[in-house]
Image (tube, rainbow, N blue to C red):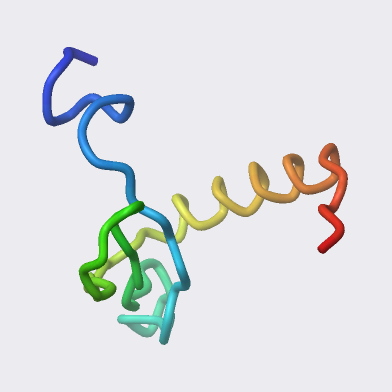
Length: 78
């Protein structure tokens, strides 16, 4: 990946607050739609609502990755 706007390590940092209303967009459940609620870290601006469409294969990959990450991490105590 080249440096610039496509580089995940440069530019503003966004905080993911929630994924709202995730639902199938077709009968085969091959794609889902929802709204990402995000906030620019350190900004006093309000949250942003971004409509997204996600392929089932991406959700499956994310599920495996998140389950592995959560299993290896220690829950924080607040």
